[in-house]
Length: 458
Image 1 (cartoon, one colour):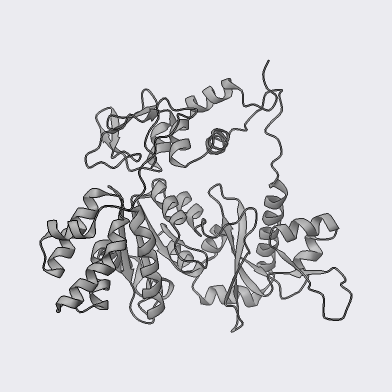
Image 2 (image 1 turned 180 degrees about the horizontal axis):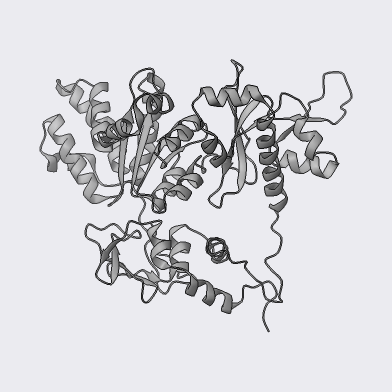
């Protein structure tokens, strides 16, 4: 007898039949038409020439190199590292279908539903508050934002009150607990010597509000910017059950909405930078949320696109942030992935620069961004004296841990050749001195639903 709550097989068959495998895979991997099929370098193993094919007729993919094959559902599970149910729900949402369960019921209510509802209500409250607050509207106009872009990003305003949101949506204990879990309110701390009377206040007050959305467009957190000289300038939601800042990228949902098939992502530092760039037509800009770029961010980026450009201010803080990004990025460099670095002129950030010189000039800068290898060697050369034997030896020592973490043999060898010219040493000898890769051995995976053979992880 069917298990209650299980997704019926007929629905899975209907979902797979309804999906366009070219669209599903093409939004994650760059596909090129080859006759009646499409080809790409396989995302599941390192290769130079494309042996990964996708057939629109059969709605099936197959890699002649590593044997990976399956349907759109199997691909999403493997590529996005999702469980079977998560992948079905992700693809069903994309196809506009509700996932049924055995026994006739729709998917059971998720434990986080009340948090999503609270955050959407807060986003609505902030948008409504913006329309009634001329000071905040004037600030956004002064920053050059159009009504269209404000609407597209759902930008709002948190009133200059301690209980604006609490008054609207926190009138019962249960509601207040949900707002607390969602990171929207803060519990008052007891004062010394006084008995504690439980009380709460709004986390965001007198700030322009930027909703942070997940890949499905659901609000999961907020960033708030002060209108005057207050501190902190930017305030983010805390980590919650829904929001993990080391994983999320601001503007990614809006970028995927604007561009059907993203080819590259431009990683900048601030909310306003993202919004300004999108308004100028550079709709592939995203920002990390008050944190350095993490391996999780990079994994997410490279599941979507083959190229990432990190954009930083040219000052000391910008260079330090760029180096941290490089240290994380070397472990993600594989065939078909490109990492570059763009440094802006002193005193400029992407927001001010794109407004001053326009999108065309800004994109011309992007075309000249430094490849990871050039930046790595330039930065290490600046830290050592490449003109002396001691300096060159020091340069090799600084490069060793970075080069050993590169998982691609081809890329590592090419970088060693480039480094060998700088330190005036034969590339083969330098390669022996630097040793092999520290990248973990790929482990074979058990077949999962929707796939028919074990294969290499991405």
